[in-house]
Image (cartoon, rainbow, N blue to C red):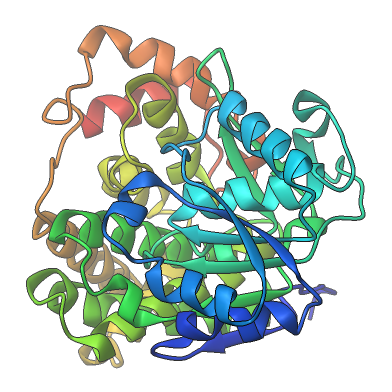
Length: 384
């Protein structure tokens, strides 16, 4: 066995209704003045009511920042950091989708140890300490509650990441009741996003390890089995909890066994067109799976056997192709655009997208098959 290391959040709480104990949980970390990072939609939907009441009941003062945008721009993150410093907070809670959770990570870091955002893009460049941090996801997709990564949009529309163990939270709190009202389209996009995390973590080139493999396989099983039920009937709390767990396991996996070409190709779609991250991943997923198939056949066969028991007795070539076909069918059943053209991407922009994808070398190096600029352009054309 190759040497490996594995890190994750030190505490995970999975409890229906757990958000209504946020005050007690925050107190366990010594918080008395909390900065709660979320978006306006969740405030309007009153998803924070129980959490805010719990904080107040515990005597904890909460400062609410609800200006998070999808694929958060640097300016939004900096505004949140400035607000947290001005409020004199001693703890941070991220509450929402991946954008809110990523913003909360950077607020917890930069409000405690000021650094310029451009100086910490990349791997291991951030320095601590940071404020105590709790992450409460309201979508089953990014797994951001257990990853050491925050993705921002730069003024030049590039997606850039801050990667540091400092970004792991102290507590990840999963409450499936918070996801019951998610629209079918959002459920679909975030669910496919989580499946991509599992697939790419299992087939990653450089840091694949037994723990990430086990988590990725279980994640894909949970997500594949529960995605359609969650899309069709979002009020089943047990199905929603299974999706949250699948997303969490996938997040734990790819935090240690990083993702590859699907994400590298997806980031420019978000940066230039503002497409939701899960949709961007979905649009390029099948072309990348087909591209990798010859090199990753054995790995894709294992993934296929994890979700389709009938593949247990067939050879790798058959099982791998069946896996890709099963994922194709699952994605095709999702209620959103299925091609770049349908999503509003312009044919003449594909070369620029390929240029930008090639800048995401930190992810491309993890792909099981090397990706050239010509390959990236061909993959976008295949997705078009």
